[in-house]
Image (cartoon, rainbow, N blue to C red; front, side, top):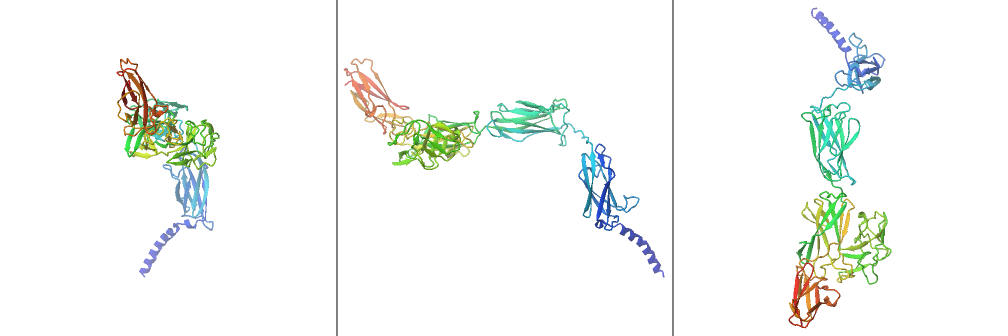
Length: 624
């Protein structure tokens, strides 16, 4: 009897606890509907401590109020906390007790935060949700930022180009005033400029700084600009001038009076550069002293140089590639010298034409594109594909082309690329390297020769013309076309160099090069005569420093007489090889007649014979 009463007593104590536990279990999964309401329709960010109460009412399937259910709240504006930004939170529905929001109701507080607008508040539970809208009015009072502790300056472009060349010619400069923690420092009072940006280093080619002052006025200067920040940031523009070079800028923070802090708050940005523009002009130049090198095996190499500049005369950027080409045989031209093919001759009228966006070069006067022929290597050579088409007086972009295909018409020729300009009165020539000329340039980075290409350094580049050096080729392109008889037809042996800059239309063509000889030239009397009595024919030969006979070399003569000359000694010099000039023949030889008259055999004259860049040969002459 004693055990049972004790059991019943214990059971009576446990049952209330079980009932309490059962009533407090989570009922979220039983929720089927939720509504939300606000204690007020608006808040004001001017009163950050004030709040409204949002109430979510939850019901189950039977429509009964549902306690102990968790509701999720979120908002796109305002905060569920007065001390931090909180846009998501949860609350549990009450059971109708004195300390909760009411049976089936969950509540949260919404504070205005720092931004005005329309807040959409959503209450969500078990897959169902509802929203309400709260207006948040007013303007937030922005806390005053501290004065700057440091300043930074940055550029959007570290490398720009000189102005007016179609390349990037400006850079955005961003200056930031920073607090000790790295945040944005305060702006200056209204009307005060609080940042000064100045050139420390510049090319002085007309560079400009642009910026907006506190007054709202856009200003520019070649040395320094004062501007105002907005939210601690000032934006300026650096524009290039006409000269390349290095740019260094200094930014300084100014106080509320627009003067420097003490100590100064400054920062610099260096390693900015203004580069030259694309190649606008190419000039070829050829030294005379020690310019030719004997490579052996009958091959000479002559040095040349080029200068490449932009439109302002600045040296182009290092590494600019200049493409090179050479022509040593002209197949057809409408400029001097005239080429006589036997069946016809070229007309020297310079009247060819091009049409914009057309690949045709037209020459109605000559009409020889299909029939022009020269002889090289004992073979007839007509115009072929890949021959060069050079127009001397065309715009740079149209100066150089290649033959695209064998000519199909006498009056026109198809080139590999359309011409950009419509032009007439054009002087052209079509040619190729058929005598052995080669051209190569120096690449400073590789320290070696590159065929058909030179690379600039400080706007200059070096190239070499290599050519066969023998009696049959030496001085090709150097000789007056009327005298040159080694190449058929006469006038076809011409040496032209073409230089074209990559990435621009700059092109130059010149004929200053030729298959020149190595100095000094030496003139000798091949029979060994050093003195003659009476009239005679002297046998002369002219050779270069490598003993190559030099054809078509002019020989200068002069006669000096002894002081007495009592018998009227007279020495006259004829022309070489019974011709009309004192010039060596194609073999480098001159048979020169010397006519002597006078009555006194003791009279003496001295005949001096010389050639350009050579020695002087003297022969003693006496009366017969």
